[in-house]
Length: 161
Image (cartoon, rainbow, N blue to C red):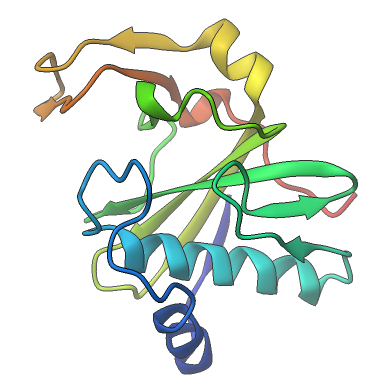
């Protein structure tokens, strides 16, 4: 896991990243836009800082192009740092996104820390994910819609290669 403390420039850039209120298929009706934006900015800056070529595509199907792979960032707001037993969740209405990899990023609610937890190929995600139906409860969490999950332990760590 990579832990980043966002600086003021990153927060400022995140606030101007998207000029609309609600992302397409937003399960929180736009409430998570800021977390998604800071997650994308920190992901981009991290890879630029280690000299990787990365393009911020900002498409519905994927957020970044790197090494000819389409990467979709999935950000989740949290109150506590992640543990390996925590879940990466993908709502069913987002299954059709045309990406090669998902990258799971947790963002502290106060934006003090961003945790790049790891990534998983779309194929591996759907081969290993567990389906939770809308209304189902899991560890005091109620799923708002049909959602597939894997644990953070199932994600591959990011590396510099």
